Length: 124
Image 1 (cartoon, rainbow, N blue to C red):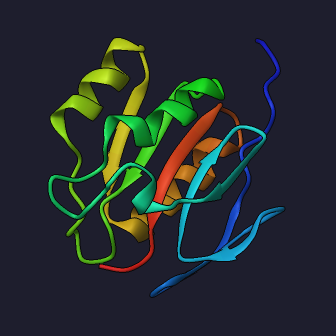
Image 2: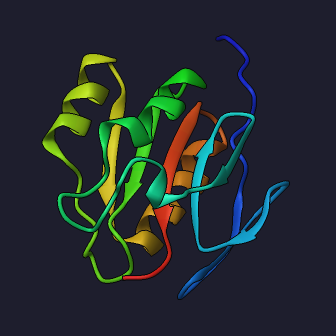
């Protein structure tokens, strides 16, 4: 099995606030093997609808994610564009989409053994 950098662990989640080991505190995060950063929705024009843009996940692919976890927000208001799911599928990446608390739990579990990435929205 090929070694890969570990994905940073999320240690705290509450409305509008997340803490990520080695990265810090923020509202929304883009995480991947070896690191991550705050997720700026304005970068690619992301909105609750139509949702997560294909460009939002390219950075995850560039960092070698075999699995991607997409959070839907705490109230499931964040959607994902079909083109985004098609991009991940064509790259052979396993995709999970869930309410943010469940997404964080799944991501942390996967990060123990797999090259996982994720997009996390800590409000609605």
